[in-house]
Image (cartoon, helix red, strand yellow):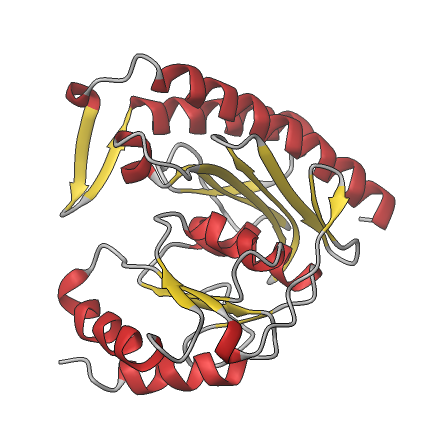
Length: 268
């Protein structure tokens, strides 16, 4: 695709994400705990996730009929098409269930191994983050740039994935290593939004493991196009097939990455 085609497609995907977000916002007003299903321990889904995904898949098929899909709730499939949509219809479901922001719609487009566009719509704040390859990152039409904070001034986000048995010693180590060395440590409950906050300079670093491609794909491009750095936990920038992400302003990337490596060495 040309830059112009990518830009036009990205803006159309923003509209799709906002429509799904509007549905989610409306359903939150009448949502009941009886609607919740448990996928795994502490990992929840509801009809809202599923119907949001169906809405998104239907709309994206009209925009790019030849593309396949990787979706969190499995309503569409990928069979080695040239283009592939990667969709999280509601990132931060646990937050949504508890009426605790943020939660978001996340949509990325892959062309082979490359992420070529990413859109994340934060529903509670009505904020649409988006980027296309080579076109920079944007929030509601305004350009985004990462912060230039050094480690001592950095606001850092270490998320807690569902696999608590495997990750608990890692999380405890990360907090021990960085609490007191950085400005502060936060946990948001939404991988997509944590990435967008790095791109917007609201956070300076974010790290998480044991997550799906739909959690981080769109946000990773938004960070990169805002001037930040993304790798997996091993430090490779070929992270799109993995289950871990480290995203920073670039300045503190090696410090965060070294902390992650040290923490991962403590796994049982």
